Length: 513
Image (cartoon, rainbow, N blue to C red; front, side, top):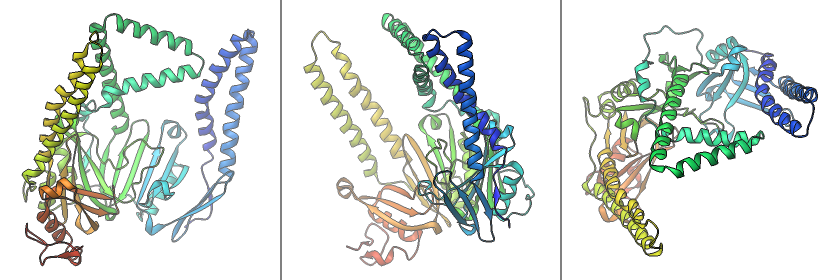
């Protein structure tokens, strides 16, 4: 155990280096302003140099104050942190509540040998349950990780559960960001350049581009879309390489450890006893390309407000068969759960849902088409005859086949199974999710029936858990089958709330009023 300790003093150099980016923007804006005021070159250079020095000095001074007012210590039963420049805080996390330890170092911190340590307790990040040490030296961070997870020395490796294969990078562009990312970056650059005094330049560029597109749309629009997709794909490849380079997922005694990242290194350690299941996620484009991702259903993976990455992701996009293998290995499933994750390979397969579930989806698709057609008819009647009114019918004409296809995909995705250890459920058309939820981690049930579900004899069964999203649903299952599934998944939990003698079968029990 340790007494009160300070964060690494190298944080001063880290703060100075990070302040240079802000200083560069401020200096550029100041130089443009002073040149507009007819300052001489020497005066402009002196003023800009002084501004840069003040910015860097201010950042270092603040970091020095933060380092002097921040201290941490590890006792026999808790990790404590004292921090705050203007408002003092004293926080403590009991060691028996530590669920995960995340080590992260971006390129700047890596240059100074620093690592940020985040200790998760399984509660929502917004509730202030995450304790962060920013930053420790690399050796101290690793030693703290081992101590918090009660691991005295590195465990011998039996081979990783998964390791990066660069052939997987072919799945990187199979995302909506490939088609929208370039436009988002262009919009951000437009605003950023305007903020540093280049608004006239950006306005002229945008006006010229719009004029070119308007003058020859049949050539310009396809070219712009193709260029946007190409830039987006290139960005997707680079982001995949940076985020998942050197990826390795391995099992240590009683825990999983994930390491990845080329420039920003990340190391996440998760205790297996906190694992409540595993999820295979297949967004539409990735699914059409034969890929999938694996996510953990676990406590201690709350996402902070400033994080954009999916903290529960355990693999990059990879082949569907490989995702099923990794998911089954992570869940340590027996034949039942492994079958659901692997599309019925061995053991039991997923049970289908009633035909009424498919009809509901077809009816919804037709209803959307009728609404769009009604709107198109009104637009046709209200628009002047000189306008190209035929385009108003594009939405309903395209919506009908797209809606019917999505309905068929949604119906095909529905399924559930009950294995010896896991409840397996699958749903989703745009994003298909297959979840193997540990039956021991189910804390309650929620049954929901809409008016139309009651008429069709269907209901939605929601398994409540303290991990992941908090609840996982079996959509549009037969009423008797849903009650029977819940009763068998966690014996003794549902029976006190049922009437009618039995819980299972179409003639089974029903929830007590």
